[in-house]
Length: 554
Image (cartoon, rainbow, N blue to C red; front, side):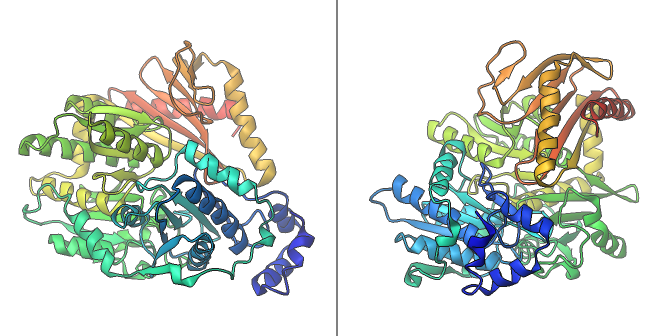
């Protein structure tokens, strides 16, 4: 779309006028050289003017496609859509324009009156009997970003075969500048107020396995300026925990003023929370990302505060949940756990030890949500746990997305249970290493922004895809898997949807995986390294990382 076409809107929309005048030549090129991609994970990008930016018109265009998809898919049904949004710049405005566009198709929208967690949106879709849902969020991205995600009638993000039709309908209307975002029927737009929080909080509180266990744990909690406050505070208090909230990060601040980063995967995000923990001598720190679908853990162990990765948190949670359910005789007849192809193998080993069936999916919690629904319909397995290495967990399927509040209350329960017996979550992790072997799971991400960066990332994938590598750091490759062709090197069909992911499994049980991010200009390298001791695993990881980085030239 040309810059000139947008200039015609400058007199109608003040935000367009201001945005165009503020753009440098380089910014103008990036904002107009293509349309913002609506992919299998929805749409996420920098805020600003132009077709390659998140703004009122590009969001309206996405909603045109989604509205047409709903009308086409649910013919003859009452069409209701739930809409939630986070604390970011323009989130409320994008939620409003989404509802306005849907109303022009006769679709009722139920919009939260305040920023609310992404998992609560998934819950609302199911609870209110909606045919779909929308979340306005850029998750843990920097403040300059925002995003748009769509959900189906089960509360799950639209999977590939569904989202592809939405994409086709969006692309059928290429000119977003022709959309009037001020036209709509406000009679079809309804509020979801704070009373609904009570229903969601009750459901989350209900997942506790040992609600009567004496609460001796002291917790520091931060919402990173996002949507999990005050909901998570209330859940902790109702459960009887002593919780200290990081006050400076408990307001809905779109600039994330009092945190170095809102991403719980980044250790810098815990700096202020650790200061609180030291001041109050807290045992546990829990942090949610802004839209409250991811959760991070820091544990006081031997006088120091130890960060746990998403893989480690998932392994510890499984050990606690499965052992507790076995003890209480509440393990389902045919339990099933889901994780992804880039998640550590340690969790799978724990699950198998407790007789829990395991299925893997591609990266993206929508694939886990899809599998939950499929097995519920078939009645063959009962969902017990799902997680990703990227700090996303689900424990009960009244939500079909990763749910940080669920994870928070269960991590608190596990930590409290072990605390009452003189152990920390780090002690539990070390016990798992003693039982199943030491596992070092790491991720290295490189950022390559802009059109040139996108090409660099594609070149890295091509280098590995065409390299036919037989070893890394002297460790032979047992087999490789290319999820773009859905084939293993021995010719086996992987039976996954196609995705630009490569994975190399080594003869010692370690593996390396490579994939471009679906929401950020990044290429990610995943490592799962196995050895007898933690020191050996760490040393092996450094060698593998060096070998892979040399090939990728990073």
